[in-house]
Image (cartoon, rainbow, N blue to C red; front, side, top):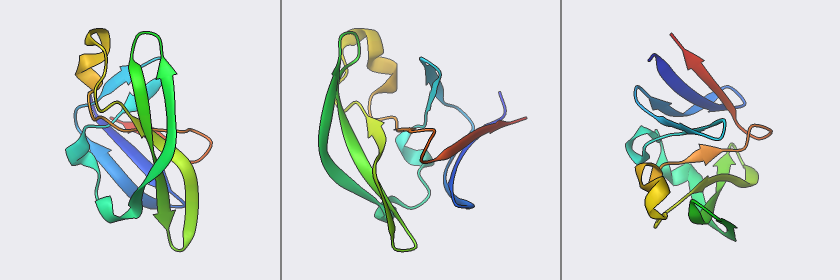
Length: 100
């Protein structure tokens, strides 16, 4: 399966040997986040018909704040239970790659 890696400006923020892929997005398990202190809660929530209500994080790297750059489902619907609390990143804000 390889490794999934998330980076912001060259700084690694998540690495996972196991992850979930949903609708083209890599969902990193909560324990794959390397430094939780760079994540802060956002007020944004969105709704998906089959996944449920998502919550968002801002990411703070070297004084730069990437607003609403990551999201997760704290209480997903049954169909999406495998991504509970997993974190996905906006591809325009965070570089996500899969290495073999």
